[in-house]
Length: 213
Image (cartoon, rainbow, N blue to C red; front, side, top):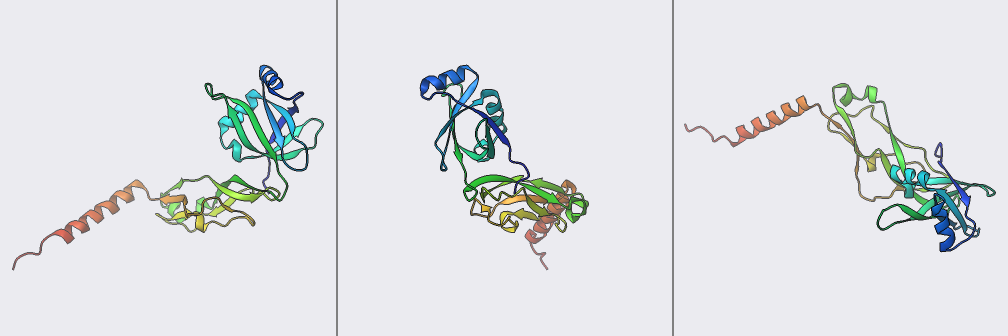
């Protein structure tokens, strides 16, 4: 399971309706609601600045959080919607859904590359080009993998790591059905230029007309 699930701190919002929500915004908070599970919906407030920072960091809606509210047990939640001001594009309300341990959710899982120091392609001057540092997987909330591991120990120039060659943690799978590139070992520019020159030379020889006798 993931080594650390980020905490999301909130306070209980007293009162409901538009009046209470407007007061929350005046106090520097973003009002929200926590729903799902076997518990009644819980109105909450989250500090505006903290929420905005998390939103700007990206992937907020695909991140599992440990919601901490004073007077309530910690619960795992995932964001289902963030409403924004139509002019300023700033958050005005959010919906969080409680998750059971058996719930299936989509999360971005980081990819870790091993044995770069022994990779033949890299030792010869190649470059590791990471196309997807994270891969979105369907995972179980109670068994979230910490990472996906890729062994570069035997990779050469021009070889790629694709989604079909990855080993996924038990119970998880990519959200994208088609095969896609995760990383490649690119050859040094000097070698690329030499290979291109050789290819052009071979093409010229093949195109040259046969000499008359």
